[in-house]
Image 1 (cartoon, rainbow, N blue to C red):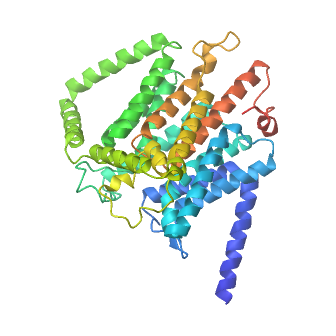
Image 2: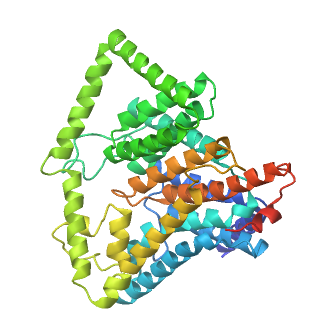
Image 3: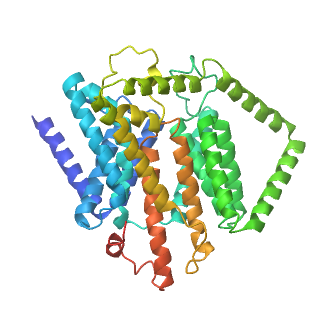
Length: 451
């Protein structure tokens, strides 16, 4: 009895402390919740969850804390709800509807497992969007955060390659993959974003040579992690960054290309083994991708089966998807049609045409918010849009990445941060034009900005 009272007292005190922190330091609360959840998952700590009749996982707690903090800020700034977040609310509504239908048909456990991935993805983005009035974040600051996150994840990868930390065993490795990955794709993708951001600092922001060194390290880590989908997504974002940066600093872009070419030639002459290692790495990945039992073939077959199954369903399931948990105890011809590795196809298969359309609308809203005009206006010079180029590159990279992967709590958080940075970067440009400092532009004024 006394032990129970003590435990309840500790939980009550922790809840009050969390509530106080969420009210006064909401950004830190959400940052801490998401970062701890991602780190524990990366290190494979507490991944079995806690059984309270229904198993609760770390990401469940992080998502609830993040969303609760966002709603608390909405109460603090009731006029700050962004219209751009409406697609997120609709997707969460579809998650609740699917879980409710599935719980009555297949049980709470199966239904909960069926909606978790979209819940994590959307909740982290929505929570950060609701936190916009509570913290200041422009494009350059976001790019700096991404770079530091990339360095942290690269450090964990290096420790695993060095044998200090064990490399988690992939249950599908024997069937599909010959290449051993030090960290999962969701974390490798953040390193790819960090590589893009570091190139932006070097190419567009014209920072010192340390940024070039950091970019080279991050690029090497991305290559060594050997996630082919991350390679494609990173190259897409980098190509867009270079394309957008060309009108802003054409001479620097030419200098960058010439320097990179000279450095490559020097490396090939001084260390020819580097070329051999790169060739072997490329050969192994190409052979794995072209094999009959490759992950890509497995996924594409699953996409086809999932889409065909949806179209053969009733009108209700075609519109909003089948009840969550339908595949828990069902033997399928291809598991990839139930465990779908694509945010787009997964949303279509599990939430129907409505869910797929809302997802595309959300991404379209993000692209519209981030995008800058093809020809800068007279009132805002091209240099004022320099920070926007990195936001566009990061967003495009993630949209490409979500083709072969569903994304997780980190990818959702990145989308939310990109949106906040896009809205506030525009605000700072406007504020700078009337000679108002950042300190004078407080959160309450930011909350009234159009969204």
